[in-house]
Amino acid sequence: MRNSTIPTRSRRLLIGCAALASIGFASLAQADTLEDIKDSSSVRIGYANETPFAYTALDGSVTGESPEIVRKVFERMQIDTIKPVLTEWGSLIPGLRAGRFDLIAAGMYITPERCKQVLFTDPHYRLLDTLLVAEGNPKNLRSYEDIANNPDVKIAIMSGTVNLGYARKAGIKDSQILQVPDTTSQLQAVRGGRADAAIGTQLTMKGLADKAGDDVEAIADFKDDPARAGYGALAFRPQDKALRDAVNAELKQWLGSEEHLKTIEPFGFDRSNITDKTAAELCGA
Image 1 (tube, rainbow, N blue to C red):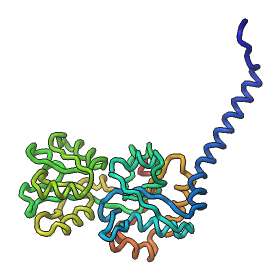
Image 2 (image 1 turned 180 degrees about the vertical axis):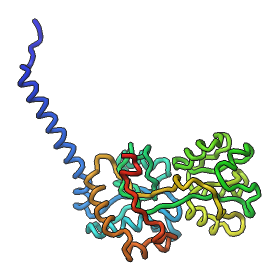
Image 3 (image 1 turned 90 degrees about the vertical axis):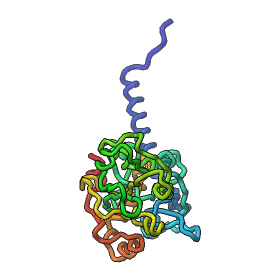
């Protein structure tokens, strides 16, 4: 006996109902995290130790440009408690998607590749990169190309950062690249002679140089393509569009205000770092 079939009209009705139900469930899922945060008056943020973006201070508190922005924005949303979750940089996106925290507050750059995995707010800063080298810059390194042209030179790059792709595109071989988990490891690699240079944002490399004293320096005349400027933002799970949109709306009202500028000043940021770029533009949407 043949299996019975559902009449075409009924089948179409069932498919339509299923589609509507999936839309409803998707909308509900988007709202859930936002509602949970409101109900508990707390939000979990993922960060990696990278000064001045997000880091654990000597007193054990978590601070930096991104966590302080999160505090101010969620205060405006009447959310009182920020719960930081320390994570290696390369594990931030997997940790977010796995639900270990509700958003990434680590100064993460918006890139088209990352946009396929997370939702970004519009950026809250623009920065260029530079190199950290031994005092006096003995290898005379001022660009990715200088490193690519000298196969004996090694560069320390934090795993999971955009700099890894930039280095490879510039012709730097993998044998020249020392991947490390954090900026402290970058500093140690240069100071210990395991790398001739480390790459990162101007503020990060300058901060490391200040921390290290006379051993290393952040070069002031790094030659880079302005198109490779980094745009940092907060990142959310793809299903948390309602939460991202709510935070983005608060950011648009607050960025550039005197309170915002006062909040970011201790971390080396000022009005010159503010940008009118949008996440949609930077994602290539």
